[in-house]
Length: 308
Length: 292
Image (cartoon, rainbow over all chains, first blue to last red; front, side, top):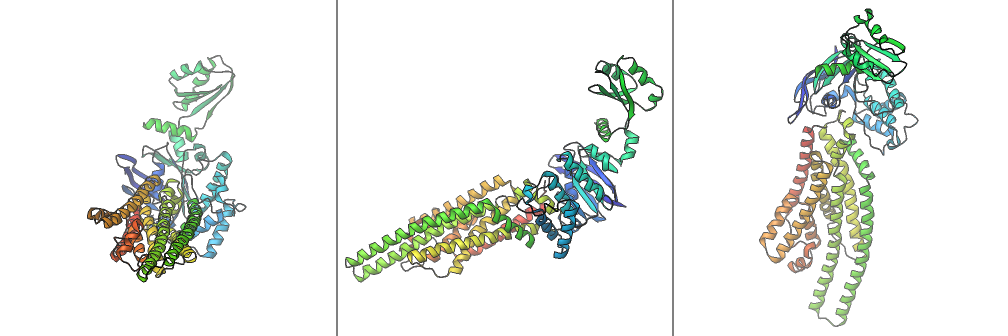
């Protein structure tokens, strides 16, 4: 059964179509990466999912309940962390969570219990009495996750949960998401593709409001990504790049310092030894040579380029 | 709704604009109190000199009316500027009540919770209304107490006067709240402030029109009162405060601070409907708004 089902969802602002006929199915208890370049329509889609924006057409179901703009019935079945969450700076973290609990109509006892548990989960116990205005970005993001979990939702919707964080903050938040994936469906938009590699089961890529592809990440990598040959030279291989780019077995070449990455037309070319022979012909010492697995970033760029 | 009202009340108390309003109000009350003291002394001295020069009974009665009217004028002066302070406080404190929370994203997480948009608006109105009501009542009472202790002037019907006085900032609050759901904070601030100025000028024109018996000016004031009834409510207060023997002579005496052209009770009813209407409009617009 799908935890989230989006059908034929569209949103236009005047003449501009932000999201166009989007269909998505998100499996229960999966971590779903919602990818796309800036302005692709990710945040608009999420805001329609959580009831902030009225869809022009289409339907959304979350945890079996249909989302209807203006109706708050479904708001208990999901938790939502907005992009760059903001808080009342004069409140403490604990006060904010208690306020959030009040919005769900929890009893005083439940309010206290859940606040305590969530502060522990996001590691903000020590800072619970401090004003939010004194929190770091990472702490605010963790508080944002805590407020999204107040109702113990089946589905957690995170909009760019880690994009604005430094590496330590990112790691902390990703660790929390890893913890939550055990019993929740997590829908997260991001443009940090290394994070997608780390935690996502399934991904969808949208561009200019339209779905490019939706697939389990592993299948996507296997099906669509070209194998990449990574070669480290002893010196700058600049002169070799144009010649490699002209080769029939090469799709694309990227150079970075003494390293080049060669996108192969297919993996069978490796068996023919053609690449090694070609590289040897350049008379530049080779330090290392090997086929790498494509990263989501490579895949992302390739799919978008193909579509455009 | 109550949880939003509580939050908004707390939020309103923490705003710098309230602190500024309190400081300015204390300054205003101090200046007003000093002015009241010297004005009262002068009035009493001149009255005593007049009596000392051997005025007849008719002149003494006339002098009593003048003293009484002068004291009422001083009360009106205090209430007029207090009205301005609470009206401006209502505008400035609530100008971004919805728009700034959309702009900075605070409201996004809240709106994804099971709370209706209508309740958010009503809660926000309730929170600010509570703050403004307490503040307005205290300021009103401060003006009355200064007059009582310094000038020995007392008013009747104080609860009614306070209730009317509180309606003024609430009317501005309702309009500003509605504007905040539709416009940016800056645009709403400019619009609300312009409305405040228009209301004050319209009220003045109506009084001048009544003094000059110029129907055009009076009608201009009436139309302005329909667009923004806050000044008309002040005129209602002025009319109740200046209810001293002497009729139109006294009304003219109070100049633009008085109520030569006193509004009818229907205007108070209109102001209440106006207030409720704008809160309803705010709720309706916010309920249909895309929060981007």
